[in-house]
Amino acid sequence: MPSPLQSPRSCSTCEVRHLRMFCNLSGPSLTDYAKLGVDVTFSRGATLFTEDSPAHAVYVLCSGQVKLSCTSREGKTLILKMAMPGDVLGLGAVVSNSPYEVTAETVLPTRIKHIPRNDFLAFLERNGEGSLHAAKSLADEYKAAFFDARRLALSGSAAGRLASVLLEWGKASAACGQHAEMRFTMALTHEELANLVGSSRETITRMLGRFRKERLIEVRGSSILILAPARLEQLAA
Image (cartoon, rainbow, N blue to C red; front, side):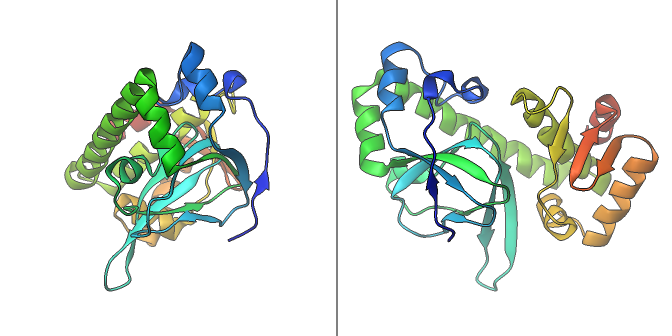
């Protein structure tokens, strides 16, 4: 794993704190939370934790993107989700004292808040607002997993599943204030994107070409701009 670089940052002035439930705390709760852990910057390709390893910490994603995946006994890897700023990684495993369910790997230069398990649990024990936000964050994870499973199981077309994923990333990027428009960096290869949406690399390449031709998206290198979100919503429905 690449060596992390400590990067000081203030939770009270964080521009993405409002995006997710857990770290959107107030008053004394935020002050207490800001003292926890250490801010760390990782380069692309760093592994934060691995599937089935002991849950020693939670990772609050401040910037960048993290790929969450699991592997079968036969060695096949399934990409489950792309974590975005504001997501709390390892929360369920730390709270339940069970191994991590997934492997977390950075796909862009990424800044996280690393909080050791014992410090995090002590924070929840002494802080009612933090405990409530942790419970709501777990509920959000459950809902997200449900919608992801429904997308894969019930969407009748690869185009619909791909449209849903592109919209999700575009909305997340716009909400983070990274761009005025729905523009994001495509950090996955076509093979990995196919894995995520349950399709083939060839189909993903063909669908992206179709979306470009129909002016649904604009692609410049690894940058994708959503041009017609309403039309992509129709495809994803």
